[in-house]
Length: 115
Length: 112
Image 1 (cartoon, one colour):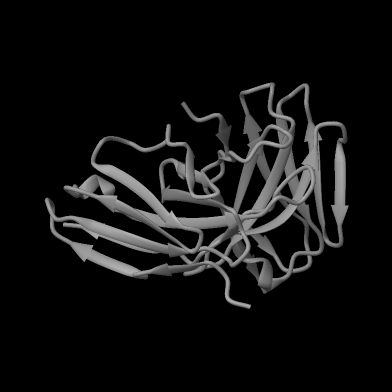
Image 2 (tube, chains in turn brown, red):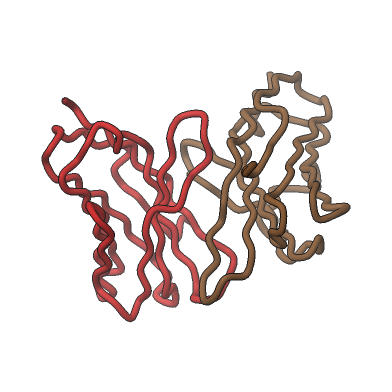
């Protein structure tokens, strides 16, 4: 069974360039989460979707960040323009309703370096 | 404002001994807590959780303790094994909620 798939696994870009991160959730999961991991702040939730609809984007740092989920099997996180402080590991996770508390399944992450 | 804090960035333990990882939280409304484990180049994976109605939850070598009055939880691993070397993230949420608040993580190294 394929887990959460993220691409690319590594991205190096120059400041000012547009960056697009991609995620395919586990089939049958109806919730999708985007996280950012940094040394200082650990794992931060950026945005999450239920049934392709954005529910909470309060963690999105600023207008340079945007996320979409056009269908149940695909989501993108876009940074435009990118800045060096955006360098981090970005994780996508998915889950499905299962009683009181859902378990989130994480992808392997995209390591982004903005020069 | 960091609502969930893991104050030890790293911890080194000898194989066979007990590993204790600590986590503090500031929001007294949190009522469900989780630990995730992360290996290099992989995403975090769920390890164990505890509801605020309990003060202890055990699963094999892993036990999580919750002290609500101190707003503190800990993960005990005994005995520690080399395969336990990883980064451990503590997370807190509200029962039934989807939004998890994570700490910064603690890197655990088990020495042979």
